[in-house]
Length: 296
Image (cartoon, rainbow, N blue to C red; front, side, top):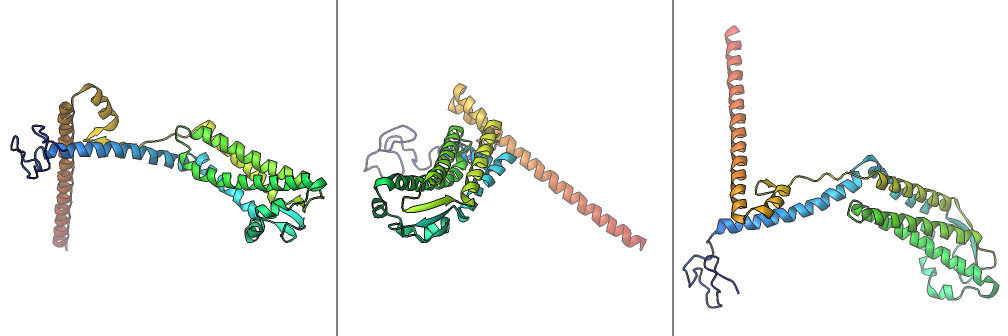
């Protein structure tokens, strides 16, 4: 239940009038300015914490030239996916067209990849090749998904755990894409697929290595995060947090009023100076025009 802001009396459901039944204070407007100031303080502190996140995201993307380069190198590995990744000849039960395979081919024939196809892969002597095919496919898909996740999580690169997160992602991406290529390269000809690596696979691995190298270089050099200055009642928020440790709420409020009054006076002074300057310029212009008319 609510309480009276003046005397602290507990209000009942029947105390629906705006005046306290105990002290008679107007509950709606009593100490309204102070309550509004308290709400404003809370809002400004919350804005400060939100602004810190925005500043970290901004620094992650454009904090340094290397950070900008990292965005580019994080996107570049997508390009080779549209080049020939492997050159393959398929046999039943794999229902894929023979020739070069890239991301577009995989998307267009995605329906041919399912659990039944995997179960129907040849066994016996061809079992090892079949397992290599499945492993290479899964690892390639994993590396592609991790590449997308890495790009998205760059927004958190300057967060407290950003460095460790990026290093783990780089290691997983490199390990999965290289292992995928190795599985396809060592796969024999006895399975349902006879394949060799294409130019896209080599370029994909190369760009992933470049991306990891740039990412690690950014992490080693570091990115300075510049936080926008925030205020609570005219007091810089860092100073406000320190004042909370040593001053009472009443003393802090008095200091806020003093700071806000000074800020308002400074704004009024600047406005007065601007108006005086404009007025002077107007008078000077009129005098010059009058002098020009007299000369004429």
